[in-house]
Image 1 (cartoon, rainbow, N blue to C red):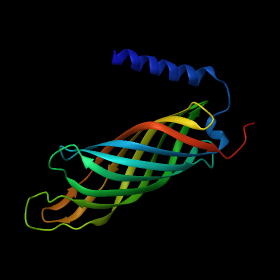
Image 2 (cartoon, rainbow, N blue to C red):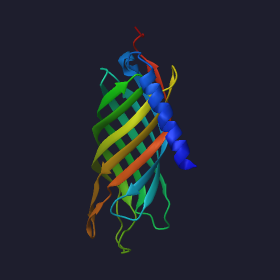
Image 3 (spheres, rainbow, N blue to C red):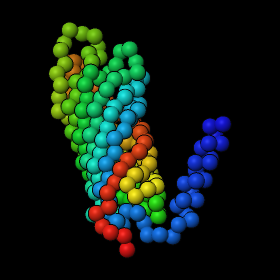
Image 4 (cartoon, one colour):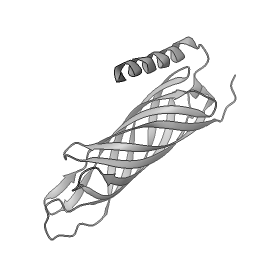
Length: 191
């Protein structure tokens, strides 16, 4: 059942992207904004986290965008989570491959995080919240289905380390997946 729905959605996306010979949607220099829930999968720990995120993106060129992202840690799905607090801010450029209403993208976004892990070794040492560097590799797909709304699927690979714990650095690398409804406003009129 799920396989049939997935194939039908892929066929719909393919037909929308190849049937229309209109100019690419990103040539209208849209400003996009999205809110989403992100599911995070930590690579070095058996931990899955839940984040709320938002981003703001501007297209100065048809194939290039500048984007800022914010992530706020909500909770973990495990009883003994790795994190107590984690807030991430990213800013960077993305490369786009638009085709009509479809848009595939990828890019790098450096940033900072304000992180406080749980006590990983159960010792009597208090860990403090720290400001740390983060690097995100982002990729995704956007379908512009109306004048003001779009559907998006996104994946981020976040690389970061908490330095200064009793046992050394704590690796906090995480893959985050999200999707949902986004909104956009065109800053250039269609030709």
